[in-house]
Image: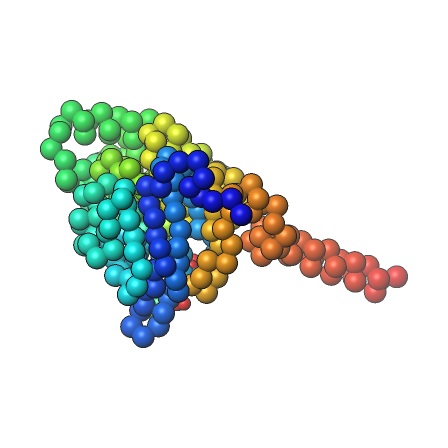
Length: 263
Ligand code: ATP
């Protein structure tokens, strides 16, 4: 098995974390790493615990066990606000933009920790370059944007704080295949041009494996596979359960059976 940190230092190291909702253990001894400058993905079905992993890293949930190191510093019992200030951004599932504020106000909320006006203006220009549609809609209420535009705004708002690591929770959720492609190509650009490391949680395994360097498969709160995305794509289990190969063969079998009946 190739190790995630085989080629560079880790910006994030998660070791053996356990998190609960009341008495329910949602993640059970999860360990993972994000090498600096890379995209790492966590795949898993509905309810596998992907969102819980990200919430635990960003401080929304406190783990009962385990450790989380960001740039070599332990962050596992810090508040979400402290963690954001350290340079770790989180784009939660469902976008969570401020619907009654304008696009411009949402973006300035992302820069609330900063006072460097010139730097903020430069960053806004870079964001309009990634997402021209946001520039065209600066004065509109964020709640009136389409799902894809809200996703773009949520990512942009997190970028305004200049994070060195970005946690992205299902950016493809509810978007058309065309928009999913667009969002993923921008995520890749952000990673390459800005050098932002990314931990990407996704149900869309195909897209995630295409842009990430290393991947983990989460099932019922546990990591069951970890390998380079190249190898995960070739794995029979991943093909069957996450890339839809099983569905195709089942349909093929049904077609074959129907054909037999018709004869
Ligand atoms: P999805 O893709 O549907 O978001 P997920 O892989 O992100 O799924 P989580 O949302 O992390 O999964 O949920 C992991 C487990 O924890 C599930 O069994 C879920 O029902 C449970 N869970 C999540 N949030 C809560 C909560 N607020 N209270 C109680 N249980 C919860």
